[in-house]
Length: 374
Image (cartoon, rainbow, N blue to C red; front, side):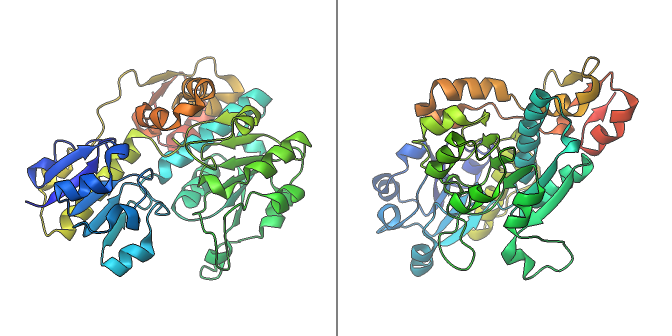
């Protein structure tokens, strides 16, 4: 049988893969060059915390790498191409979950400000899988949205794209959903940096739920000290897992890179990597077994909206992501960044939830977002 090494933090696959492969489940820290060689693995199933480059792969039997993530900047693609190593990623699988985290975070801000999200203008930077999901949900919420994606604008002509500078002038919130690109015509490294921060107003909120180095930590700290920027909501941090405590203290919503960590997104990603791995090695997995890659039913899935008032939408959205709990742990122990990610209790997407005692004026919106209104 084909031998695989699999990151044991990838859920819902432990009872499926061993039926078709010889599998060694390891923590991310244990996935080393020595273990790969010792085990004779031909395939890897990993997360972003495993850096796949020459130092890990040289002299091994690895022919295939599947990452249970949308991003691939943890993989040296040029080296893998030279070595004939085939890559697969789980593009789009976490998009609904990231959008859910974003609107829960914005809901928390809206409740604090006592201002419905519908009154905000949202600028979306990066309109790939996640940005598209965000735009769709924003439209359902009745928010005005503006889009910025220069490379996509060269290929797609039916969307009203604008420049980043235009967004800084017209939007009260900017949210970034771009890959990390350090060179070329459209780099995103430190895109949330000095130039942008000179353009935004002191009340403009900035959100980073893409890649940590899209934001320039030093520039953000200076902007905060000089009151050049509004609220910061950050899930992805430069230098992860060794993040800036000074920036953490400035951020109004802070989580340890778990925005895409819904149980449903994890199931989609796990099914994606299992399917891709099986396809590469010429193995057919029974559909009934693939269907078992699913999260358990959600217990206590009733949300009582009887006292939610004018912020019913916001309070319902916030209920689905336990931001207070993960923030409290993260702020108290930022040095445990990776363990907090690994042990995070996945949030559950709106389709898992039922909402009762909803005022009629909010019911249609909640249903459109995926909730069941009782």
